[in-house]
Length: 355
Image (cartoon, rainbow, N blue to C red; front, side, top):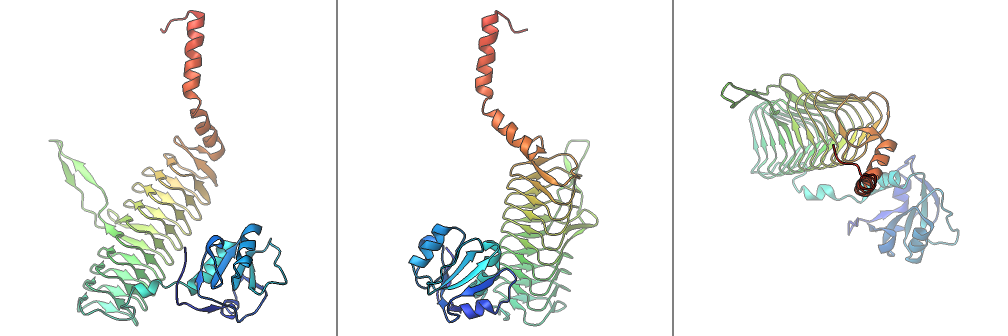
C-alpha cells in the first residue's frame, strides 16, 4: 500500500507535470488526493491507478477524487472524479508517485550536517549536502551538490559521490571509487569491497592477491539493499548509466556492465565478465567468469550463463537454452519419474537385463 498521509496533491498539479505519459481527460482540476491506494482499498481521499474495467468500477464506487486509467478504458462522463489516462499505468505511476514520495523525510539531516558526522579536513563538500549521524567522509573525498548521505555511512579517502546522489544508512563506498549523479544506493550495500582473488601455494594454503583497482558507477544508477560491488584487481569494475539492481546482487571484480540494464534479486556475475546495454536478468541468474553478454538479452530467473551470448533474445535454464526450449525442458522434467517407471516395465516385459 502506498500512502503518504498529510500530502495533498490536486489534479491541477498533476496536469502541470506536462508528462508525455499522462493525458488529462475530464473532471475538476481542484480535486484533491491525500494518498495513493490500490483500487480494492481506495476511498474518497485516494488517487487510484486502474488498468481493468472492474478496477475502474471500484474506484468510481469509492468516489476516488483522482483516477488514472489505462487509455484502453472508457472514462465515464458523469463521474465527479478528475480523470487522466496513460498508455502505460506503470509509467503513469513513475510520473505521479514522486509527488507523494516522502522518502527524504526519513533523512531529517537533508541539507544539514549532523554534529556527529566526521569529515576529514581535506574532503570537499558541495552545496546543500546532507550528512546524517555518524557519517564518515575520508580525506580528499568529494561529495557533490545536493547529495544526501544517511546515518553511519562511510565514504573512504579519494572517493567521489556525484550531485544529488542518495546514500542510505550503512552504505560503504571504498577508497577511490566513483559514483555518478542522481544515483540511489540502499542500506548495507558495499561498493569497493576486495575482489575474490587468491593464489594457491605449494603447501595448499591460499595467498591473497591484493585488489588495487576501483569501482566506477555511472549516472542514474540504483542499487538495492545488501549488494556487493567488488573493486577491480588492477583497473576498474564498471556499472553504466541507468542500470538498476535489486537487493542481494553481487558484481565481481573487473566486471563491465553497460547502460540501462535491470537485475532482479540475487543476480550474480563472476570476475572479468561483460554485459552490454538494455538487458534484463531474472532472480538468481548467475553468469560465469570471462563471459560476454551482448545487448538486448533477457535471461529468465535462475538461468545460468556459461558461454558467450551475442544474439539478442530470451534465454533460460541450465544449461542455457532459448527460453521457449528452456520452458519445454522444464516441463519435460516433471515426466521423468513416470518415464523411468514405464521404461522399467518395458525392460521387464521384454525380459531384458541391465548390462
